[in-house]
Length: 72
Figure (cartoon, rainbow, N blue to C red):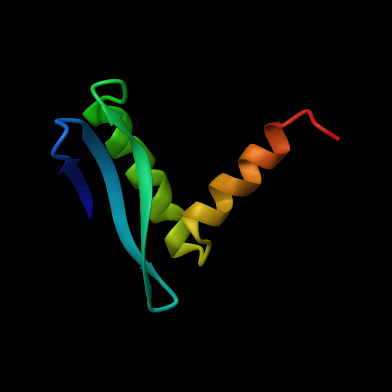
């Protein structure tokens, strides 16, 4: 489920709440309006596809960041 979390400071954050192997998890999709609702929905759709393949979206995101890092 994609949610819009509004903090007391007024910031708005898009989140994706899901379960992986029975454990509840939350994936940050970005701060609104820097991340549009369409972008949040697209990321949500991609994350749902990963879940159907039994891949944790947060672990996949971490792996993608490591691959894109040019550090040694």
